Amino acid sequence: LDRAGTEDLLRALAAHMALDVYDAHRPLAYARTTYLDTDDFALLSASESGFSRRVRVREYASAPVGQPPRLIGICFLEYKAVADSARRKARVELPAEVCEGLKQGRWDAVWLRNILAQEPFAQLGELLLRMSPRVTTFYRRASLSDPDKSLRVTIDEGVIYCPPCVGGAAGDLAQPPTMIDAAPARVVEVKYRGRLPSWLEQIFSEVDETTAYSKFRAGMLAMLTEKIAPRPARMTEPLRVPTLQDDD
Image 1 (cartoon, rainbow, N blue to C red):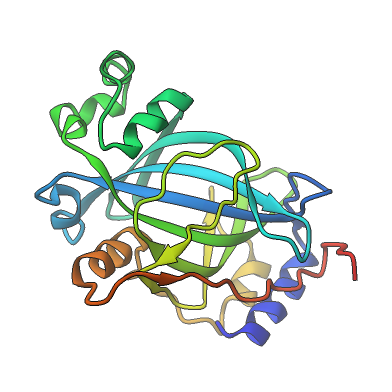
Image 2 (cartoon, helix red, strand yellow):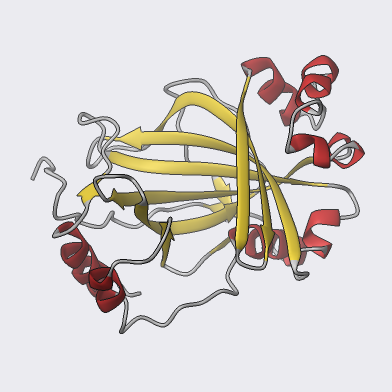
């Protein structure tokens, strides 16, 4: 969607859903996601099959309007498995020392042994031992939810693919200093339980759905085919979300 179309979509959604604001003083939300894979790219190679898996480190950041995003200082290790239309996701918080080790491409053996004793991480087994950070994505995210949280719409804007950038303390600048490539301007996702409400089907009736785009796959391919040195990263001006009261 272009900018005007996305803002029209936000206005239509705001009649039925509330904007998720996690910090009223820093209302703009960002996500920094570092994807892991093996040296022989086992997860990337399997990504076109009917069963694909992702292993990633997710970090969050926020900012007041007009200021750069800064990390909140919490990391999560996430495992996501997709088989046709079924999805399963689990995550655990990463201690700061484990994040620090991942910067060097190594795991904390004791911590990892405990994680591999838990489902669904146990399904990865020896594969997880061979994984290290490969590519980082960074983007601004606006999300809206219905009252019972069974429906969520996220709009990711300004997605960029960057060299691996994992782990940081609260207050650190969140945006990676360099980028490899940029993604489509905006990515809209609908996540729901049960049936889609008729009003939402109507709102999206004019929108063409894509099932081919994957931040993991696009970022990995950008990293593997990069022909030039990473360049300074820039972010576009954030969307104006109707339900967000900003300074101006």
